[in-house]
Image 1: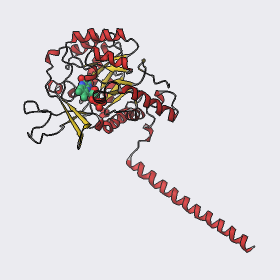
Image 2 (image 1 turned 120 degrees about the vertical axis):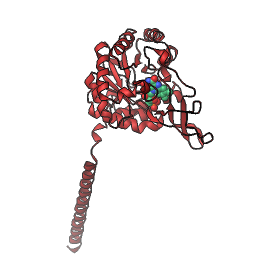
Image 3 (image 1 turned 135 degrees about the vertical axis):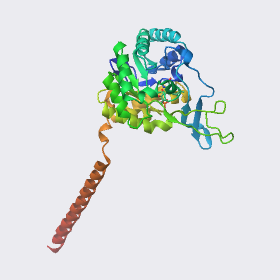
Image 4 (image 1 turned 90 degrees about the horizontal axis):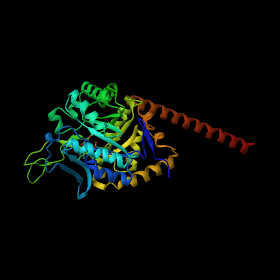
Length: 366
Ligand SMILES: Cc1cc2nc3c(=O)[nH]c(=O)nc-3n(C[C@H](O)[C@H](O)[C@H](O)COP(=O)(O)O)c2cc1C
């Protein structure tokens, strides 16, 4: 069995696969189950100081399926908010999980309003539970931005730097900033988070979308009392966008570890995010659709890939394909050079053939 462990910010992950913040980490029971099944770590559902402000709707999910095959989910939308469970209950459960599984990595996802006092309070009280790291949710794209939280913060590099700075001022454990893909240039907020002192970056959160319109009722979905709001897109369909964001962040924030996510369905998807700069891989939607048991396939697939390419450690994979991004003009130049080289080679081959023919001729005539 290959060694699948990786160390990030001094934390040893038994394998790089981490359940992302969302339904898979919604309470202590499911967090413990994920550890039992072998996940390297888990980020709990995002928590805040005052759960009474969080009100979820039913329905809150929508799916884009393959035409003619409703079972094949291509993309997934949610308008779910952060956790609506009391903060004090969460503190007890985080401490309980960490005590029961000290070797497994537990990361607390936290979110607050744009107030230094609130961020300091949530960081201090959450880290006291013994969690290994904090992930600052600066990226939830729906519901919370109406309260100037989530993506409303993450889309503003100045606010990102300030909030990360507040959290870092109070934190004694590593702090990751979770970035939003709902921006034109993902590097600006990522670099701001690093300036604020972030120990790591997590990307991507969900992409704003409208999953569809019901052709019977003519109402957009998911429909709540006839109405809806754009929500967050995730699952298989978003992998190419996640690959681009992780690549751009890795190139602009060299040296800062990235926890990559978005559309990871299997080990091959995960490895691609690693090759473009992710040290750990988070999974949310696929775990909801396939079940927590998918972790065995992820580990087996990673091991097979490492054996095939003779990687001795997971960290050797990280960023391996990054040097092969360039500018379009450079691609054109390389292609021209290759064509010239090929033409030159063809010319040299012709000459060679000519020389052989001459020699054969001379042999025959002699
Ligand atoms: C139903 C649902 C709820 C989510 N809730 C949270 C959350 O509370 N905090 C957070 O940071 N991200 C949340 N996410 C985003 C995921 O953590 C992840 O960034 C995103 O879904 C992309 O990964 P995936 O394609 O593997 O799902 C949620 C995603 C889904 C589908």
